[in-house]
Image (cartoon, rainbow, N blue to C red; front, side, top):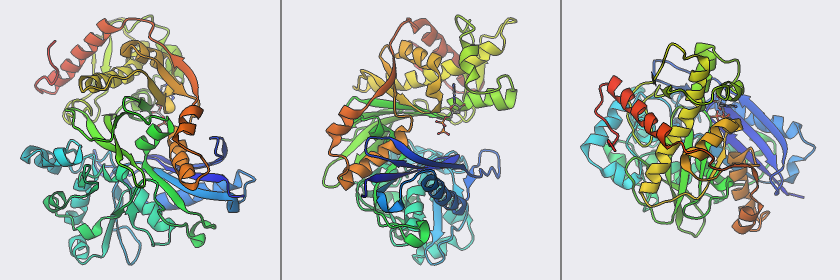
Amino acid sequence: MKRYILSLDQGTTSSRAILFDKSGKALGTGQREFSQYFPQPGWVEHDAMEILAVQLACISDCLKSTEVSPDDIACLGITNQRETTVVWDRSTGKPIHRAIVWQCRRTQQLAEQIKTESDTFRRKTGLVPDAYFSGPKIAWLLENIPGARALAQAGQLAFGTIDSWLIWNLTGGKSHVTEPSNASRTLVFNIEDLCWDDELLQRLAIPRSMMPQVVPSNACFGTTNADCIGFEAPILANLGDQQAALFGQACFTPGTAKCTYGTGSFLLAHIGTTPRLAPGLLTTVAWQLEGQKANYAFEGAVFIAGAAIQWLRDMLGIIASSSESEQIATSLASNEGVYFVPAFVGLGSPWWSSDVRGTVTGLTRGSGRAHLVRSALESMAYQVTDIARDIADHGITLEQLRVDGGATENNFMLQFQSDLLGIPVIRSAQVESTAWGVATLAGLTAGLISGIDQLSAGWQHDRTFTPAVDRSAEYRRWQFALKAAFAAAELDWLIPSS
Ligand code: ADP
């Protein structure tokens, strides 16, 4: 009987395929890493053909790891790293260049230019123009790859974020589609009208013919081609990774929020069915279901979270593993005045400054590795607090924060987060919130899961952290450390003085 959901979770450093039953139990998993290319400082690329091959291998690994027959797979859901840009030739099916990854800064100048020109991009897309998003990356490819513009003008080239690329291949080239949560990360998608915006496309000189068709997040995106993955099943859900986690954490009503702490951190707060702008935050489509209005979220993005712990491990060599960080941090009773602003690639929300750099303040002769480790963990919580306070300033008061991601293993960090926010921080029992989120949407579409109420009722927590210590003095000092980082980069204060 067809009762299982295959979830494809295509991330920044690895891909996964997880087979779920309707209760959220993972029956099989395949996970593989793939190559990261850094052709110049600040540039990051992926090989889209490798991403496809690795994803197919994950599906095969996943199916081999379970007794379930592919004939029992009712549907697929796809979730993916967002913004990463692939342009391919429709006739050969081959990308014209490596994919430009969301982290890549090569389009910073163009992004700055459109940001200073007018507020049109911000107003229509809900995004702060930045190298992060897809539109400038498409413009870069058309400008820099010989022959690309002529091919694009002749209708030969297709653009897609990774979801579109995978769906196009999984359906044997039949579907060139995406949905609003991914489209809303491109800087050329009008989040109110839910369509590609001609004015924005024209400003970036992107032919409309390259763009995928935008369908609801729970549309039928096509049927998998047996020649490609060995079985046929409909793809019934597609969401960007952060929006999938919001869905997986059952944040379905205004004011509910989740934060995923991985390499970076992403806090999304549901704001209802009317988009609005808040300085410092992104407004993004959370999902749009067939026949319904879109749901929107405020999003705060922290670029360096768990990556600061990786840096301590890989560059400084002062810890052997990420998990060791908790015990080292708690060997101190406090941070003893040491603050670490991990602005290695600038700072995201709410500052959006590309030029600020990493800074450590408050060092004394007695400061050692424990201070650096503790301050790195604290910085994850401070950065998320900066975002939550901005969200509160724009009328969304969080009553609790649901959390997931690799770094939420760290109990010290989550307790510190709860202290700072003054609200419960709740770790989900479902460790795969992202993959499960899109699986539930596919399951709902297929009729395996009866409704959103069932998902809300079924959501389970692993552990709740409640506020225990007043950290307001420490938070104040974090803001001084931020000011020091801005000063070191010779930037004017972005932070209000009170
Ligand atoms: P991503 O999906 O972004 O690759 P994951 O959700 O797999 O990230 O989380 C990995 C990140 O979490 C790494 O940056 C790692 O340093 C961090 N991390 C993992 N375990 C811990 C821990 N116990 N304490 C702090 N950070 C951790």
